[in-house]
Amino acid sequence: MPTGDAAVSLERMWAGWRSAYVAGAAGDPQDLGPAPPGGWEDDPAHCVFCRIASSGPPSVANGVLMVGRTVLVVLNAYPYASGHLMAVPLRHVGSLADLTDDESAELWSAARTGVAALEAAYRPEGVNLGANLGVAAGAGIPRHLHLHAVPRWRGDTNFMTVVADTRVLPETLASTWERLMAAWPGGV
Ligand SMILES: [Zn+2]
Image (cartoon, rainbow, N blue to C red; front, side, top):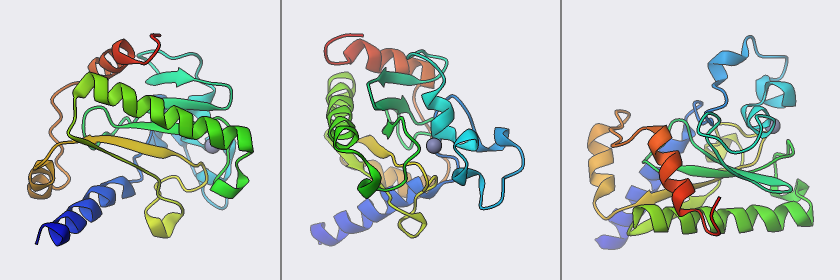
């Protein structure tokens, strides 16, 4: 049943994004101290993505690959596969409906550019691109919208299923950053 198998694999792949550890290199949730009332995601000052947005231009240190007018692209510090990146609005906004037209257009444009870089750098057989909107959908940081892009190869879910939370990644984040920057459309 190829269709059924694919559905199970996709579910498991996305379940991997339900981690509270989704973050860029600029900060981990554990670094943020006690959560404010309502949770640390409610407060932009304690939001990982807002910290990344204020972490300066792209560098291997902050893991940021691109900063646009309203959106950035950053590596996931806890990648599901090497190359796992995220397109994130600079503004602390949690839902698609709250995006301005400019933010919405640039978010999609940044996702396209990120996928193009992934394809150029890693030559994957496929890419998962998507978002978990809300806690029930598996969002680790529900208050700050973000799109994930993960390179995929046939058979990689079989491997992932076996190892579950033990993700064996063949390269460091710094290597991933260098590789994607070198492949970034239009250059750095
Ligand atoms: Zn934020």
